[in-house]
Length: 489
Image (cartoon, rainbow, N blue to C red; front, side, top):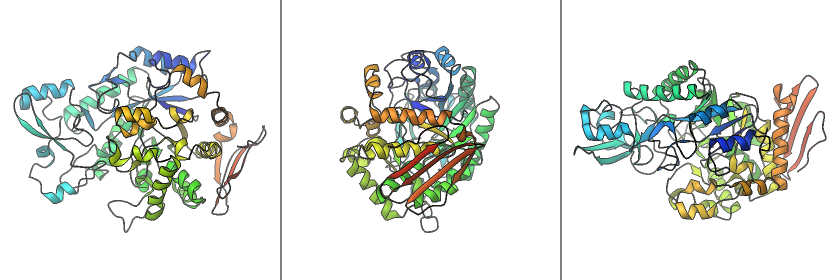
């Protein structure tokens, strides 16, 4: 993976075209984003992109949605820049050929063992205590009552939505299914995958069914299978921050999901203390993000839900609650309309809002947040809405009723061109180029001693240096680098 800023985007929501059109936007001679990014993470482009969960419920994970193009287009893009794609390991669509075969033939189907049921997870029966011990990212039990086409009734395991059926990744068919996806990716030039929903992939009676030792073992095994095909693995887990440190020791890359809420905490509470504590602990093999296609994670800096007394979070519970309210206030309560019980596709641990609006649309704070992100060790990813300093899409939220759509705007070419002329976006592009091109970022990182309210970081390589200092009391700052004039926001 190149040590340069990456873009994360839906193919059809940035420019309104397919993969070939996105390639022109990113790499074409007249492309509006030409030369900005060392890589691009294409959010699910599989068939179909408009299912129950915006492509995260594929009917066929090995088919490009024809509305976006074909594998030849992916291969052409991967020849121009690094491409990352999602491997959705936990589930498959209820409309998939595999489930349709099982629904018609029952136990005679070759896929009978692919789909998890209540009985397959709890073969000896289950009681209330065991069911309540299962960790849930959303309200309700992880089960859906289904009547198969052959007349049988089943309690299917569904961690997320009734249309997303959990699979047994340890079954021969489950393993073959995932290996087929990896091979298709490798053949198409994809050299990085994001392991989606991996924390829920293993189910075990009497346990939480989330980030267990068996889950870590599965992640390590899958990463080894991917590595054999020349593919790097990024693991996507929203959980207690120390679990990210554990996972980082087993895979190529993890997300720094603690960063977005800690950055907001620093601005709202005018202190860098929790943020600096995390910087001293965090794994270096991290992709840094401020925003993604999901919400702003809160669980990532909170206490361990399984052991609150003995495993405190990076910020106290009262400040965590206040942080959520500050985001709602800064966004003029728009985020409240998209979060929790206010919208479908519920996530119990995320606040749905664009990062720009979470900071109240304050351009200086936003640019300082991006500079902070780019200065941390790891590879920065910028979400397409964040790239354009996008506002909450309340119209899309109203139409879909899906909370996360508040941060999934559809940009046409004219909107992109207009957004790129905004001063805040121009300054962000300047920061991206600085991060990509300055030699200091290939050198040694140092977190400098400073007051609790101040964050100071430095990169050095031979005679090259880059320094960022932010005083969160008044947002006074220094961003200096050898060979150029200091930047001020």
